[in-house]
Image 1 (cartoon, rainbow, N blue to C red):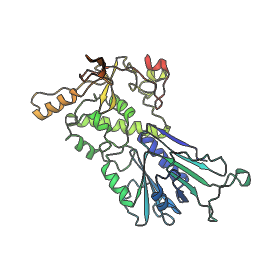
Image 2: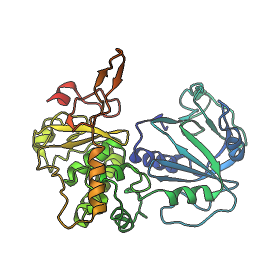
Image 3: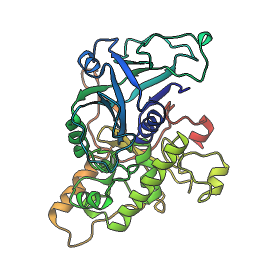
Image 4: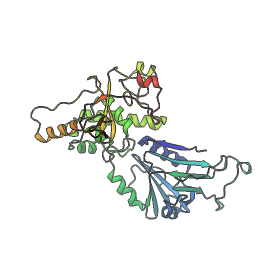
Length: 375
């Protein structure tokens, strides 16, 4: 039986894992649909009684295709640009946390829906019913799946919903149709830092903050390096590391970035990541700094060897120099210090600060023992 899938601080590999599991278990099955909390009533009515015919994952976005009859386009469509006329597409974005739980009602107890449940699917059995049967009344060889979905975004539409959304997203390192050449051409025109671009889903579709920190570390690129100054060799390292780490996350279900074959001594200490939420670099022991970058905490090893800072070469245009200056002016600590005004009121200082050594926090999405975080 499928078991509950819970996503916290979702990154692209998790969404691809869900798509794969749905393809293997639910494709070709017909479902009744309802919206327990009333926030997806029209969408539920549109897919009620239809067959789940296709699942697609693009970055952090999941697309479920429901056909009126047995599907002709099964499974993944990474390289399939065909368009089904009679199909309803459900677009799901889990946000910071989400759950798409699937149960086999014939062999396990199905819990009650929650206030956050926007969509409930219940399989229609070959005899046309969708009645939940107890495990005692049948054998485990039969399946009757029920799914509960809670997510930030649940929308429905025609096939164009998928094609339009996909065209707005960047290159997904886990998709076979990804085009790194197009991505580099786009990055090379950007005055934004690579740290920002890696989190921009219109450039890189899939990586989140944990992957951002670890990808740039392993590629040896400092986060404030501007896209316009990123050479092809450095981009190739970033892309190849992205593919490798997200593939490992997909295969293992965990964000594990330390490779025992590359850093055996680091792996022997039980380290799972190099710099994310750490005060010192797991590889060289130098301090790890953190600062706010577009609302998310950015990390870098300050030893000079792991992630050397880029410099502006003489002769670069004024636009490039202005872009670098703007980027560096935005670099500040995660939390500005609190100052007391003359009237005794507290407010955060607006003074920009340089990155400071990171103070680890308790992370539910990247758990680690206290001793490992502080060492």
